[in-house]
Length: 385
Image 1 (cartoon, helix red, strand yellow):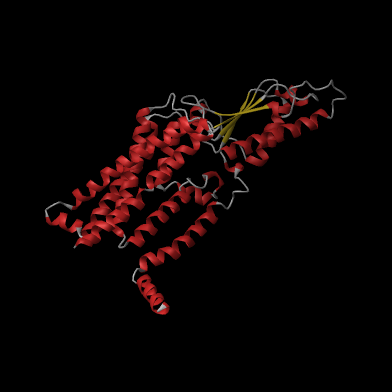
Image 2 (cartoon, rainbow, N blue to C red):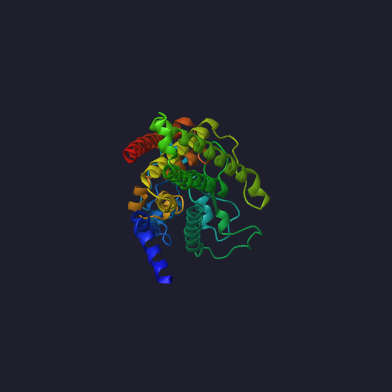
């Protein structure tokens, strides 16, 4: 009897080859993808980041510090008069400002009590990368200071608040909107991920209605395929809206209660935020409809949809920060719909951007949503015929 029951289960498995293939192929793809994206996680590519130097101190020690930094990070970009705007929108990753008096500070044997170097990074920079840049700049300036101080015969004791770290002040640059916190970096990423995860629920419900004959009966009553798909999309757009409200509320009110930073929406463009969330929701629901029309069984719906979502998150900068990826993976990330949504929300929440600043990402998301909806109609018509 046991052998017969086992044979029955094996037959059931072989009848769903698509779901079975997903169980084996998707984890393999995930392993390959995660291995590639995490290739440089222990070696952050700091040297590849675009930067500029604002030389307000042009004396020799300050020039030496600039040359020391260039050895490991390449030549800086021209500062230009628009450097603040470039830094705010992320096209320039960081700026090192060497304040007047830096050379005298480097030549002094006494420890620093005042910041003479400012590290200004773009608002959306990852916290690990931010800390790595700050630590490296402190190390470079401290090393140069130690070398120069050897020429000074003797000095008075250090002030109580003196330290090497005090010479460098680092901050994320933001001319508009709230100052970035870790919560404001994490909420956009997981908000996008959660909105795309409606694929699991929508696909399962779609397969259930198709297998029960409910969809066929509705079509026999004259309901068009486009109308049927739209009737499924609209409720899930509402679900996504509720997700967004709850996750933003958790960042604003719940995180401070458990000791975390609070999400601040002060000064942001509400029109840009709503437009970005709407575009992400359209893309997520349209993709879910296309996958729902593609799968044939409950097993496929429960397996393929969530796995595709996880793979997109891994390759879209959601689960793995973009900065730790090798160069070719960073370029690949830029074609991911999840990354478009993430960049749109980061532009609003971290960079203080408005509607015009989010239009490139929003336009891609809307075009992707339209393409997926057309594909869903085509697949629905093909399966129904």
